[in-house]
Structure formats: C-alpha cells, structure tokens
Amino acid sequence: MVKTGVPLVIRERSNEGSARMDGQFDELERQVMARMREIYGEAVIDHAMNPRNVGSIDDADGFVAVKSRCGELMKMWIRVKEAKIVEVAFWTDGCGATVACGSMATELIKEKDVAEALRVSGQDICAALGGLPEGNYHCAELAANAIKAVVRDYISTKREPWRKAYRRNQGFISV
Image 1 (spheres, rainbow, N blue to C red):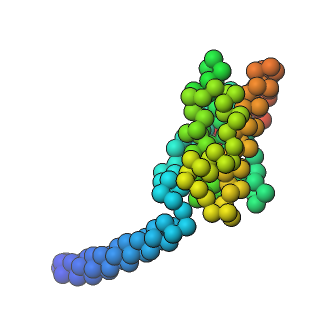
Image 2 (cartoon, rainbow, N blue to C red; image 1 turned 60 degrees about the horizontal axis):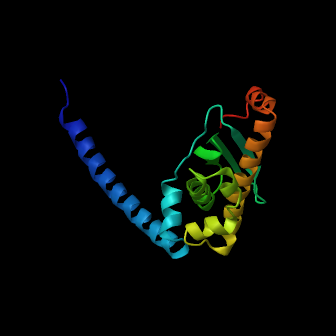
Image 3 (tube, one colour; image 1 turned 45 degrees about the vertical axis):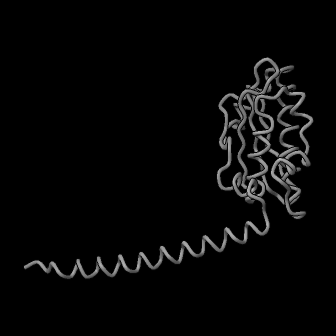
C-alpha cells in the first residue's frame, strides 16, 4: 500500500519553508542594495552587477595581465583594425568596484583609436562611473594601467609578431 499523504505533507511544508526563505533572501538583498547605494553610485552598481565585455578574445592583438597594489588581477584583451580597437574584453578576480572599473574601461576604449585609449586615466574611469569612494580609487587605476599595458602590448606585438605566437604557446591567451 502506498502512503500518498506523506509526500504531500512534506511537499506542503517544503513550500512554506521555501517561501519563508525566499522572503528572507529578498529582504537581505534589499538591505544589501540599500547599503550599496549609500556607498556607490548607480553606474558603479550597474557595471558591477552587469559587467560589459567580460571574457577573453581568442587570438587577440593585445593581451595583458596586471596586478593592483592589493593583489587584484585584471586581464585585458583587444582586437585592433586600422588602429581602432574593435573588440575588447576583460576578466578580474577583484572586488565589485574592480569589476565596475574594468567594465567601464572597456566601454571607454571600444571603437576608439589606440592613441585615444592610451590617454584614458583612472580619473576618466572614475568620472565615467560617477565617482568612487577613496578606498576604491586604486580599482580605476588598475583598469587604466591595464588599458595602457594592453595597447603597449599590441604595439610591440605589431612590431614583433613572434610575441603573439609565443604568448599563445605559453597559454597566456585565455582566462
């Protein structure tokens, strides 16, 4: 004989507990977002929660991996056509502010001439995000340093194409 009532009772309790947990998670998320809005502007939150251009570019024209003074790593890839950055991607193991800065940095240099990209500073990234708390300014500097380094890598690889093949053989192309 099958006891049909037992699974039904367990299922009902499970749904009640699940609904209660969902409500608690929703409240926790609301509190976290409210606290984030006290510290960060909407652009920072948007780029941290929905980063643009995350990933890698196979056979990129330029690649770099740089570390910040606090140990966060940012990798950046670019594809260049006729001296214009036509594709850009980044990856980081850093905090939300670093993700936001990397995301904004890629947006600032996409479709720009490589010379223009070299002029992007940490202040430009910070301003584009609507500001950052003082303790997170190094995140914008990391992203700006990554831009400069990836453009320099592109220039040196263009002069010495063997660098690209070496980088591929050493496994530095993918995240």
